[in-house]
Image (cartoon, rainbow, N blue to C red):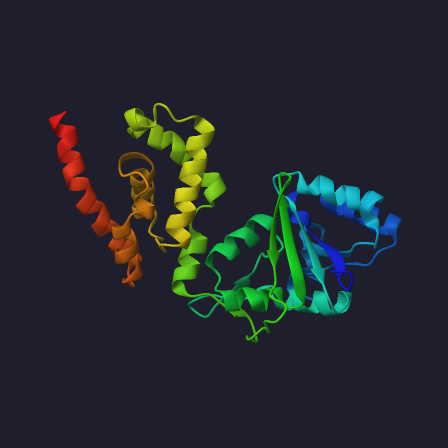
Length: 282
C-alpha cells in the first residue's frame, strides 16, 4: 500500500458544521480538496456536497486526521480510500460515477460518498459493477459509529463498463426498501409484540440484530423486494419458523426462481397453514 495515496471522502450534507470544519482543516494542513459537484449543476450546493481530500502522508497525529477519525465515530460516518494515479485521476473517476442510470432510462445521483448508501450499494451491485465503481481505488473503507467496513479491490481485475452504472429493476427495488439499520428496531418491537412466547427469552439487542441480519439476507441473497412479503418473511425467520433462511427447501426454491417475491409468498403460505392450525388448537 506504500505506492498508494490515501484520501478522505466527506459528505458535508450530513451536518451543517462539516463544511466549515473541512475548510478549516484543509487550509491548516495545506492539502488539496475539491468538491465532487464542481462543474456540475449541483455545484450551487457545494456546502452540502461530497468533498475529496488528499490526506497528508504520515497524517496520524495531524488535526485533519483526528477530525476524520471523529467523523467516523458519528452516525453519518466518513469514507477513506486508498488509490493509485494521483488526485485528479481519482477525482475524475468519482465525479463520473455520480450519475446512475435507472431501469426506465432516467438518470439519478449515485450517493456512493455517503457511507450508509455505499454499504447498501454493496448489497445489490454485481461484482462487475463494484469493479467499475472502484476504478483506481484499491481500498475503500467506510466507518460508521466507530465501526469500519473495508472493501479490497482485486488488483488483477479490470473495470469493464463505460458510462453510467445501470441498475436492474431488481436492484432498484432493493435500494428503494427501508435501510436495514433504520428498519430493524421497529420491526423487532413488532415481532416481540406478535410473538411474545417465541421472543420472551431474547434480549432486545439480540432480537434487533437477528431481525437486521434476517432482513439483509432476505434482500441480498433471496432477492425479496416486496415490503409486505419481506415483513412476513422476517417474522417467520425470526419467530415462528426459525432459521428459515438456512432451510434446504429455501435454497432449492429460491435458486430455481426468477420471481423471488412470489416464491417467498408461496413458501410462507405453505409453512403458515399448519402453524396457524396449531395456534388455533391452543
